[in-house]
Image 1 (cartoon, rainbow, N blue to C red):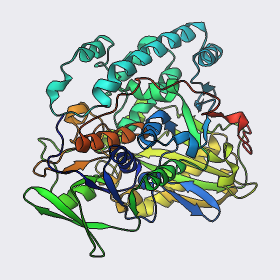
Image 2 (tube, rainbow, N blue to C red; image 1 turned 180 degrees about the vertical axis):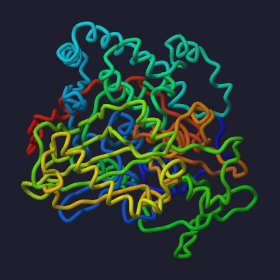
Image 3 (cartoon, one colour; image 1 turned 90 degrees about the horizontal axis):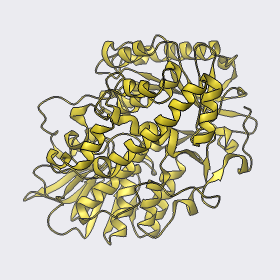
Length: 522
């Protein structure tokens, strides 16, 4: 594995999102002196939180899987995720509602999910689910250590027996076809293939290898941190500070001082100069490219994932059919993905993710109120409406979205809203997200593994990249890994860890029913 050259005693990490904080913790654990520089007033990056007149709103991801990857970063400095964050294991992980009126609870416990599939679709589909679950476990084992949790220096690193294992598992076929090999019910197939959207690719075109995301969602387990998802980066920042990191808030970097192929110092907008031996850029990739003065040279332009419209709604009521996470599927499926990735149209029959964080933490809203997060995928600005067009389009789309939710059983949703925040590609663009997408570069074959933008910077001996735009990719688990991989480029080593997460225990993972103040109207 290639590493940065020369001294690495003092490392400046630019950006205090999940990848930057994970990187800082691993660097601190390896004995480096670390300064974290963040332009915002506190940690989080994409996983931020704002106070919307009494509603504490997570501005980024709402689904936490593979928390042992975060715990690994805490462990690097002798700390523990579970001593700082109370995690609630979600049962069910999701509830799925379909256009035909059917409903299915998605359990990560195998026996519970098999019984639910039997109830929903019969014994043949339950048997298919058993086979699918075993296949997902094999897919995960074949990929995680060799192709996800690794630094690539050359595509030739793919030439390993694990590649043959992945091929034998059908990992290079198409995702929807492979899922269909186990499940003939089209509704069930959606449960295990919608995750391809996280990777920015339609299930009909995504590699079956991307089922590793379905493994994380439907087998490994889903958790909720009390205090919201922002509790995770907040705890990571506190652990880093306690381990000796110099945390600089409201500090924007506007220049990298270079000489002889190395960055010698980071200069802030205030004029302050911070000397360093190495730099990790975990900020937005567009910001990193501006600081570097160039973008990576590639034979084909980077393609970005679809974007999303998010409606944060603080309401005076909730609806008993909702779980913590609810997937509301429209009748359309393939057409929806064509609209998102090819024709650039808004979804004519949308599939939505609805998260009700107050299900397990009522303190996120004023007493007697509820907080709902509605995510509607939409085309990015490279294939769909421009960022500027969303200035007028956004309010109309918000009203259409509220009307659609009411048609799907959330009666009087619009009238129940007390406070709201609408986020569209216009806002994502203003935050520096290329193509107006918070999901960064899509995971086409040409943008995955060794073909994804590398985390080493050509022409600079001591600069490393971290975050969802570089290896290994998009999503909370992979971003945490990205921070660890960036640290390894500096320190020269990766810790060996168990391939699979340790089993949950009552002392570490709190069941939903045991959380004081939790309430689930469902």
